[in-house]
Amino acid sequence: MRILIKGLEDERFHRPLQLIANLFFEECEIAFNPLDQNDLVIDFTVSVSETINVSGVLTDSKGRIEFAAYEKALIPAASDKEYFKQVKHAVAHVYLTVLQDWTGMTQKWGILTGIRPTKLLHRQMQKQTPTAAAHQQLKDEYLITDEKIQLMQQIVDRQLTVVPDLYELQNEVSIYIGIPFCPTKCAYCTFPAYAINGRQGSVDSFLGGLHYEMQKMGEWLKENNVKITTVYYGGGTPTSISAEEMDMLYEEMYESFPDVENIREITVEAGRPDTITPEKLEVLKKWKIDRISINPQSYTQETLKAIGRHHTVEETIDKFHLARSMGMNNINMDLIIGLPGEGVSEFANSLQETEKLMPESLTVHTLSFKRASEMTRNKEKYKVADRVEIEKMMNMAEEWTKEHNYTPYYLYRQKNILGNLENVGYALPNQDSIYNIMIMEEQQTIIGLGCGAASKFIHPQTGKITHFANPKDPKTYNDSFEKYTEDKLKILNELFDKEESLA
Image 1 (spheres, rainbow, N blue to C red):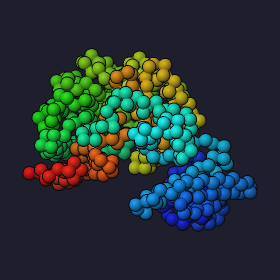
Image 2: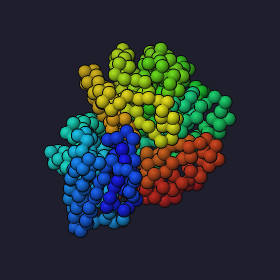
Image 3: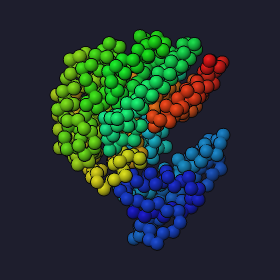
Image 4: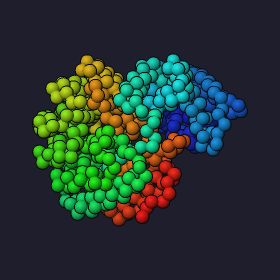
């Protein structure tokens, strides 16, 4: 599909219009200059005064025409970026409408291509907007369907039940600790994750830097009386390191961080079953950590082999039972819809196997072709299900979780996600992950420690977000962790209006 866009000269429109076109067409080329042959021409007219007025006329190669228009009040903007964002929103509204009318396809998430749709509803809740009015705004402004609005409302309600003081946690922080090692790298992965075999030197150096970051950050938190809400060990796979290294890491946490006994939740991803051993589970038990992830992704062995996961289906099941027998009483499992070669029957099998285990929470991901992944670089090698089958699998997940008393409690979306769907975390009563709620709803600062760990500093009064990322490769991290720690502490001092405490 080749689409010629007329009437828009700002190149900043190119990417958002391409992303929306990708929702409708498998292969699509957007152009702002005439092509030799166009399948569609969309001609925009934009005028801005006290209101933003946008109209669009779609004409196809057979002369069929679709028309849409949208008007909204212009909110005074402090910057050109804020001004453009409002115009872009109006253009996207018209663009999606003419493409929906021409194709007959409804995009259930409307014009949203961002990651966190539930934030829109939280914002209205904080303003105490009546529910019906908030829902109508989501329909009118973003073209979100009733089905997805109801899902958003269900999740927001659940989050406020799990964390009743969600809107009052700005003066606390959560901590993310990144361990950048895995047994092997999965084909769909873009996280900082390095095969651990033969890297013991890198691991030792990295852990030295991580301990340093934990000590300095703990000192700052204690000196400034800032509480920790949650701690999350991610990666990579945090259980790739040895039991002894895990033991020292958690000991450091207890020594460095303030009031660890009263942290609401500590989670360790043990996502790769081939990293779980009785010795490592004993270490977790010793430090009173019982919330872990054991992620099958699929219960089809051919799929695991195709995506580069070198564990067996049986190993996933065995390690789950081992963890359960050793006192792990809050286990999350992940499944991915749309893995290469998988359709309805394979996903049905994964749900049947999950039913035998009944983890406390289940996160259902929809495969996303992330730009830097092996899967995206070699797309022709990884054949995936079509949009209709992907949606069937998501419906199966929704029905299965409802039947088994799981409730959706967080949601996020990704660019290039199959079927324009979403990733949803489901949990049994009182087993929701508080950290997952905090990272998605951006109500408090999350400090990232370790290689590739991203920090998200949120101003306690204004809500302004400042992003800060540690280096992704272990060598650069090992060479510079002191500087990155110092930089983060400076941001924290500014954020919480503290005097310098870097000594």
